[in-house]
Length: 319
Image 1 (cartoon, helix red, strand yellow):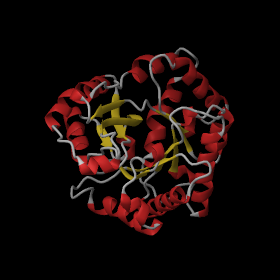
Image 2 (image 1 turned 90 degrees about the vertical axis):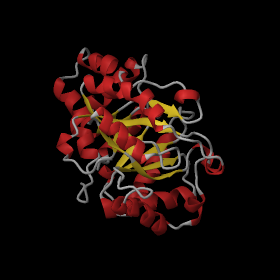
Image 3 (image 1 turned 45 degrees about the vertical axis):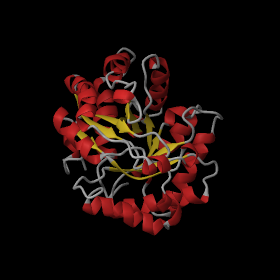
Image 4 (image 1 turned 30 degrees about the horizontal axis):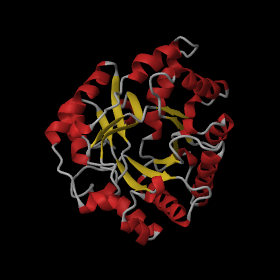
């Protein structure tokens, strides 16, 4: 489900599975109390050249994983999609990470079923009065163990998935690994909850899996059927990503891996969005390095075309 409506998953082409266009990084309470004016023309002027660049490099789809309370703006994403010619997806769900600074009151107050009804309503009727529908369920979790609130939200995501077929993409843990295994414990507790809710684990994405230092945990999650997303690539990280991807290839698990950069981030609080991280390094640095280190064209097609098409299909019959 793109911001322009449904498309055949086979038409997504090369897909960046986790990026950001526009964000408001202030605490949610501040966003509500002091809304910032949005100059759509300026955002498009700043961001569009980065999108045109990756379209020229072969990209056809960008998944905007900006969470619902971090500046998600479906009409802006649609405008950028139409201007760039890229398919784009947006989110529903709830973001509880970063010490809860982005949690709105309704997430605290509503039950799992009420949250699921809210998110399913965005799928059925559109987001915030628009006709733009979400293409994934985005969660932000960091508990080890999960808090009661986090467990409630995971159950809500499971029930939303059962109604919509949307994949659940879960940001896990701190931005950088502080204790080997901590992020994995958060991940595997979610997998156990989803199984208890009757959800196939192919409906779940481990976002920022590269921050888990113990590669065996990536293998375990993939063997259980989950998607493992190495999505923080930046210039200078080629060796690390070759190591991560090489391990998954050697284990016969490239078919469970997503690849992206967590780049972009036009910051609503900064003049002209502040520093914008471009989307091209994956194409100009990582893909050539993969080709030079034993990854064939079918491997690259699996990572960037076949896997995202399967992961982001709204599928009620996942296995």
